[in-house]
Length: 489
Image (tube, rainbow, N blue to C red; front, top):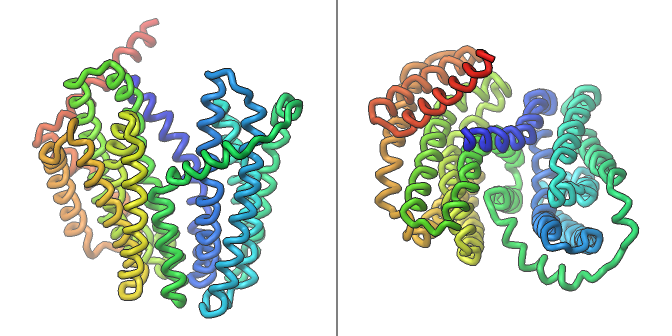
């Protein structure tokens, strides 16, 4: 029950940040159209890669430093001002790098040349990201404020979109509005800073500069991999901005499934850390096996379910012109399972076992492979080449991390644990596809597909005697006892 509560708390926090942006997605795609939304996705993706590289690592460094300061009696104001100064330096460097790329690419790339005015709004978005203080509130364990601030600003942004964005010519207005909202929303967080921070302003940033440079590898992950592929597509295939819009929409929709699956792995981390400190080897192996099974049991039906329903769903949700978004969601669906596995191996065992260097090395190798494969595949396959590079890179990371985690889990056990779920998931996929092949793209069709898939998968894991069924039954019985006790009182 405690593990279930941890999972529900974490997944609810993450889903709020993922689902709210999906609310205006259908409206934007219908209003802006394929070309204008492609320009929007192109501009936001270009900005995000520089924000992630230059500011993302600083955010993680700041949270860790502030969190340690609470226990080691360090001075929080000194850390705050040093991190802020470092972020300012990184903003300047990031802005210069972004300006160089735009000016360089505009000399020979039609996409950059035709969208000069829109791309200039990237600087507005970068400034808004610099003003973000969520790293301070998260680092000092004040999670409620950034969560409420992010949710409220996204709701305001949604309302303004419905009021101001009306035609396909409003791409510039949409991006300008996003930049202003990001600046205002993040700027409001500055007014809630405690006065003690301003009583002791001191700088000593060279130590933070060294630490910040070494923490750059912390940003390596699926977000940077996907953004890198998107950037390569804009440079190597300048006439495919429409597909950039499809890609961004597919990633946003798939992000909901990824959050649900990855959080399953993250929710098992406290238990893993406790067992690891007890130095109980047999119990550790059992926990890792259970964690892999839980993640696989959740990820497989989500992966095959996404592949089976994506085209139908996007056709009625986004419109017929965005049917290809569903195709991209289908191709991206294996990412759901790969990220779930990597959360257990790299995010859980290797990091908590003190093997951060191995995790960082595999991520660097994965990113380099992602770039290399992107350069090879994109000229021939376009955006699909970027997706192939992304999937191969994540699979390579999984194999390398599995090799270094072989002392607690062997490849044979991975196969034994996952094979029954993969077979059941494949059967579920085939049943959905065959039974609804000629059905019209209506919401009722998607609902039926989801219910049918759930029933088939549930029957499959029951017949295969999955221990997950026993675990679920024990949780239901425990909650039933609690409800009865409260009712009797």
